[in-house]
Image 1 (cartoon, rainbow, N blue to C red):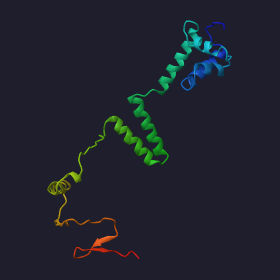
Image 2: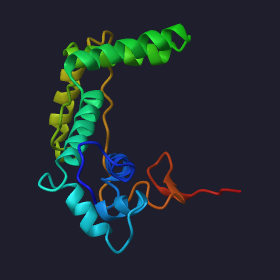
Image 3: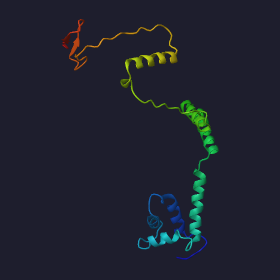
Image 4: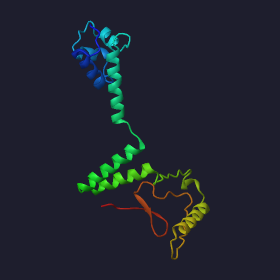
Length: 182
């Protein structure tokens, strides 16, 4: 290969393929797609990426990568502007759901929203009856529910299963009876 300051058509093709597909396939495969022979593709691909042999090819690869980084980079300003553009386009198209979503995300980026999550430990099963009643009173106060509330007293039956297999239930006297489902 001849060393020149301008890329040969094969070198230019290699750079294009390498920039486009270099993350999905090997440099050797990029060289083969660019038209280099399979028997020399590994050596050629290595040399084309080495500034000692082909500094102009390496410079072009770096220039193209920098261009892609600039084009696809994200900053606070560009992110806010893009969301505003998406919002405006959605609103112009009558897609108010999309416009609202874009505006909400702009607000999130700007820090106007706080994503608050509470992690509760323990369950009602681990609380005593008194703790459950206290918690219900606390929740009623917290939710500002007005009105009168009736406390329902409950009795537990010693040694009898309630709601077992669904085929039996307790009658008014607390005796088990089989229900006829026909």
